Image 1 (cartoon, one colour):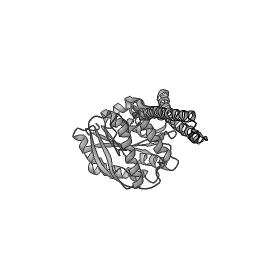
Image 2 (tube, one colour):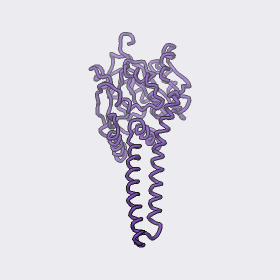
Image 3 (cartoon, rainbow, N blue to C red):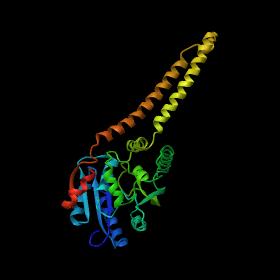
Image 4 (spheres, rainbow, N blue to C red):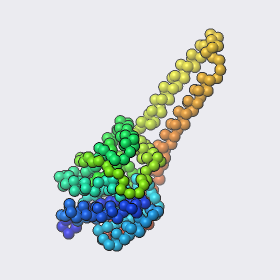
Amino acid sequence: MKNGKKVISIMIPCYNEEENARPIYEAVRDELISSCPNYDYEILFIDNKSQDRTREIIEDICARDKHVKAIFNCKNFGQFNSPYYGITQTSGDCTITICADFQDPVELIPRFVAEWEKGYKIVIGRKTRSQESKVMYFLRGCYYKLIRSMSNVEMIEQFTGFGLYDKSFVETLRNLKDPTPFIRGIVAELCPERKEIEYEQPKRRAGKTHNNFMSLYDAAMLSFTSYTKAGMRIATFLGFIIAFLSFIVALGYLIAKLCMWNRFTAGYAPMMIAIFFMGGVQLAFLGFLGEYVMNMNTRLMNRPLVVEEKRINFDEDAQSNARRAG
C-alpha cells in the first residue's frame, strides 16, 4: 500500500510504438483516475530496444509524471521474456498487463479490479471475437484447441496474457527462474482460481504488428515443447506403424519375386517413393526433436531474462529488490 491506498501497477511492453506510447499512457492514466479513484497507481513501460522514437517519448512521459516508470532493455530479448520480466518488476498490490497497441481494451481495468477485490487472484481477458483477420482468428482458435487436446495442462483458449495478477502470483513468477517463460502456459498451470472476462479484440490503433510467421512459430513451438509430449509420441507411434507397413510391403514383394510376378516387381518407382517418404518423415521429426533439445538447452544455460540498459523513476530500494527475477 501507499498512503493508505492499494497500488495498481500497469505494465506496458513496447517495441517500436512511437505512435501509441503517449496515447496508451494517457488512456490508462485517465481510466485509473476516473474509474479507480480510491487506488494509487504506477505505470511501467518496458521497452525491448525500439528503433524509433518510442524511448524518447517514454522518457518525456517519465519526466512529467512520476507515477510512470521505465525499463529500457539493452537489446531485443523477444516477445516472451521482456513482458514477463516487466511483470516481475512491478511493485503494486496487483499488476495489469496491457499491450501498447490498444488491442487490450483499457476500459476493462475497473472490471478486472472489481473481480480482484472479490477475492480472485487472477483475472484474465479472453477473446471471444476479434476485428483482426477472420482467417487468423480461426487459425489461432485451431491452434489453442490442438494444444489443449495434447497437453496435460489446461490451456486457456484465446488468452494472450492480458489480465490482472495479484502480487502473490507475481511473487510466484519472480521465484520461477524460468529462462524461457511462456506466461499463457504458466497461468494455466500454476494460477489459483481465476476469473475470465470475455471481450472483443479491437484492431491495432496505429503502426504495424510485429507478429510474423516466425514469431507465431516461436510461440507455437514454445507451447508445444513446454507443455506437451505429443510431438515425440507421434514420432514414436508413426515410426512403429511405418516399420510395420514396410515389413508387410517387403514381405509382399518377396513373395511376388519368388512367384516370378514380374509385373509387381518391375522398376524402382515403389522403392524410390518409399525412400523419399521415409526421408521426409525422419527430417520432420528430427526438426521437432531439435525444438525440444533447443528448449532444454536454453533452460540449462539459465541466462537472465533480459539485460537492462537503463531505469527511470525507480527509487534505490526498488532498484535493489526488483531485479531479483533477472
